[in-house]
Image (cartoon, one colour):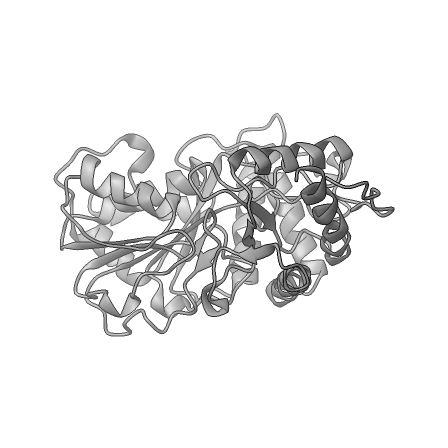
Length: 374
């Protein structure tokens, strides 16, 4: 440790957590619409606000009319497990995993559903050989590995003439990348990531092939009420127009609407992607100018632009915790230690709700904390 002085400029909004993520700039609780609070979600206003949320998501994500979008319980995890439990089992399964959440879907497929999937794995920071995927099988994968900073580079590896279904856990990818909806049969995400919304609610997107699976196939295992998407062999269409399976938090819905309206104010989906790219580029410049910092994801083509995972030369878990504690004590960066199962390092969220100027202001504080913990 030297006598390095503390930097003069602090990030104005030091919220770099990878979930729940920073609120949109200018957010304030007293700006949320509240007329739906204390009302039934099945009331006229409740249904209208849920539909408003769904319509905004559909519009900003540029979803084709062929795809349904619904609000479901349990955050992204609940949405993805709902898809797995209702649609898997008709044909063989391939699970692609390179970080902890992908491994979670492997665990569900192997230990809970007893499906004996083909598993393609890679270490943290790497991507498996996507050319090995057999598209006669149903395929489980994360689009953006939040805990490893590794993403799939595009959708070209997903076969256009696939026989199986593609199941994309897209929770750190929507509103940050252009997703090829013609290649995605099932997608899930939560508001708490790129939108900076509240947790506990998931979003389930179904393409026409997924709907066909649901209406033509009944799994061998029992389905809890929270997972049931069909009735008498037909999709429950109400789920995809605001008639949720269980009672939603209307406050969380209003918060999501506010976030989506903010997305509208910055130029919609394209504006959100542009802000994410600018943030990731600013962090890249910081990393490139410091020999002790690196990217866990070595290949830029598969490097996340949202949950960016950094390596710190000579740092073990204790040093990373010490750096994170210094950031928090100084109010310069919250919740930036890497995920508990990942190699020791830092994780900086660069999604659209973060300001590029705050990323830039973070650089000197990284230097200071690294020096203080030497």
